[in-house]
Length: 235
Image 1 (tube, helix red, strand yellow):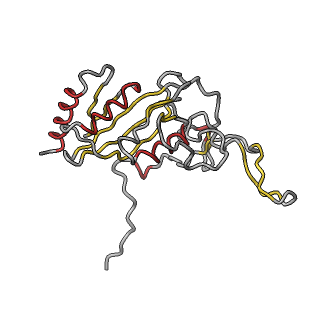
Image 2 (image 1 turned 60 degrees about the vertical axis):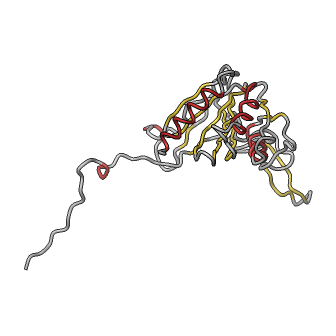
Image 3 (image 1 turned 90 degrees about the vertical axis):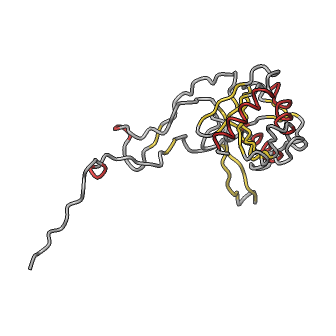
């Protein structure tokens, strides 16, 4: 069976499996199927995806958070005559207000060993109350994935057995993968020889986004251009 045929079978199985759930939608693109589920139905849908024989998603490969604030906007402008050079940077202006509804997303990547097919499940959360049910009781592998999403995005997973930070330091304030979190951070640390310990202080540098790639117009990239060949002497 080809990958396309497996995706068609999965789509047909989902259509029958989720007919009682309102608000679910499916999309197939680039050889993968994405199922969008309202957060209030997420846990029930996930349990069906795991236990239903026609779908049989036995493994949760990954869980990740997404912050859709400033979605579609870019700070990484590279073709700006007024901002050229190897140390080109983009000055940060006022950020537009993020839409409170559907600001955050949680994306689950699932794998069926039985049917040899993958799928993606997505749910959206609002800015004021980014809470969704934990799927740890369905797939134990989601434990640290959910902790990571909580640490970096501040997304809360109701029913998680040990929801605490995973990557940041003890006492860290904020969630560094949120779009409104400053790239320079909120504090800087140094060793104070007089106090004999590490101290934290407000950041002393200005926020500035450095563009790591310099794109230059060059005739070498023009179609049909070839380097000049050295002249050869003929005996």
